[in-house]
Length: 257
Image: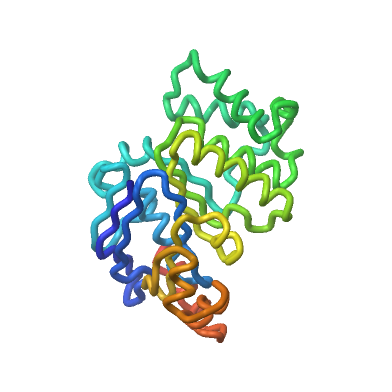
């Protein structure tokens, strides 16, 4: 479902993603794990057509990400770290405009929206303005909005950042159900080691733009001779907080202007 070969993104002389390669089969739940500034979000932005790579090849749902952008966009759902809902619209209206944008057949829109909102426990709040929702409720709306057009792949960038334990558990339960019932491929980035170990079929650890290791949590622990994923992560990425990570982010912002 996702094929990445020698993917590279440089901002001037700084390479945020450096010759990254991996493959994700249909239906897999794949976690991209790494420290701040490791290249996780940059990779997602390239896979979702937001950023153009410096070099390398990407295919999503058998479409070339560089030359078949519209087909890729129709194949994916994306949930970013920052909320992208319109606060002055209701939950239903936010969903409806997404359905129009992605050309969900008119006769299906109402029933699909209502079913998805019911799936995440928000059917009774569908006519309430988003600005009156809690952070967890907004995240639930964003996730089902991203699923409204029946994408083949769902990309989530730190989807549970800032959410309480109950909301995180609820969201992953819903996503696991959709993954099982609809076979949707899920690609998510996270800092949460427990989340990655419990949710993901396969994990890739990235640092300083390079994938250091990939496999199941058990395989990663065995390879690194660690008794926990946390210890494996620290062995691979180092125990120190490196100043160059913050400096790298600053350089990236400079080259985006």
